Image (tube, rainbow, N blue to C red; front, side, top):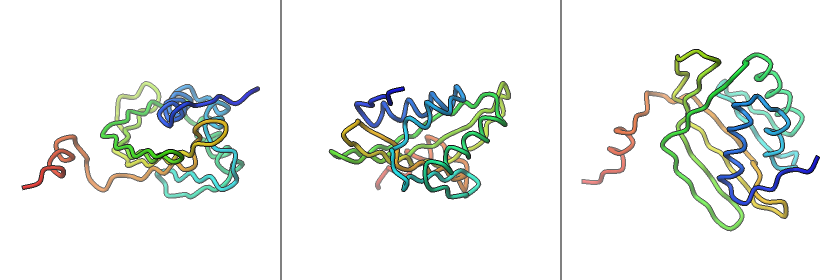
Length: 143
């Protein structure tokens, strides 16, 4: 199977979240860079390094959760010719349960190479306090 080519970091990120929603391990791993130095940090704080460790972690997540829906808000994106960093607030929903899990703070780092954009790092941490759009706007207001 040929790996998909992502024209933008946003395309790669969308493919990542779509794979999470479908529980599709192969599609999720196709977003990651082909590099043993990739890093994934889950909200538990566990730092995983390398393709094998990340694959096994997501395999376990998908095995224990029939459906994961991630709502991404408050996005901030920085993009250069070869690197993109995306910061988001995520809220996770598991299965048909309407109880939100989060908010969580997420940083995704992408690198552009010969085969398009790929994910280098996915870091999710619990937010220390409830993060709202109003709070975010207030922080950007200078007096």
